[in-house]
Image (cartoon, rainbow, N blue to C red; front, side, top):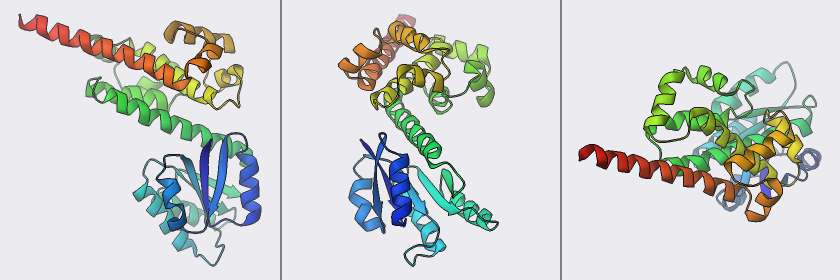
Length: 273
C-alpha cells in the first residue's frame, strides 16, 4: 500500500487524514524532513501533506520552506498544503502554491474523504505518467510525447479526443498524420490505451469496482470498460488481475510501441534501397 507522509500535523488531524485515506493509502506523520528522508526516497510515497497552521512551534514561513524543499528534492511527489479557512488564508494559499503545493486542504471546510480520494487519484495519474514517459522516450517520436502524456493527465476529461486536442491546440488532421507516420495506433486509440492504463492502475488498488472506475473515467458503463480491456489488452478485469494488473497492461502497450518502432525501421531501410 502506498504511503501519505504528513508533516507538522496534530494528532486529531492525523487521525482524520488516516480515516480519510483508509483502504487506499497508509498515513505516516513526521515533524521534520530528516526523519522522513528514507521514506520519501523509497518510491512508496503517493503524496505529502504539510500543515501550515502553526503547530509545534513551527512558523508558517518554515512550513512554506518545507514545501519548497520537498518539491526540490523529490519533484515527482505532489505536496498538499493544509491551511485554516479564514479571511487571511488567501495569503497562505498563494505562498503554498508558489512554493509548489499542488492541492490545498481548507481546514474545517473541505470534506477530507473527498479530498483524499482526489489526491490519491492524482497520485495514481502521476505514477502512470512517469511510467509511460519512461517507456515512450526511446520508442515514440518526441512530437507525440506531449499528446500521449496529456491523455493521461486529462484522463477524466469528458470530451474525449476533442477535449484533449482543443486543450493542446493541436490540429486533428496533423496529429493523425504524425501517428500514421510513426506507425502508431490512431490518436483515439492511443487515448484509449492511456485510459485503460489508468483504469488498470486504479483497479490494482482493490478498493473500487470495475463499475466505479468506469464511471470515474468517463466510460458509459462497467461493460464498456470490460469490452475495451478485451479489445486492447486481451482479457477482462478478473483475468487481468491474475496476470499482473497494471504491469501486464503496460507490457501489452509496450509491445504495440515495439511493433511500431520496428515498422518505422523497416520503412526507413526500404526508403534507402
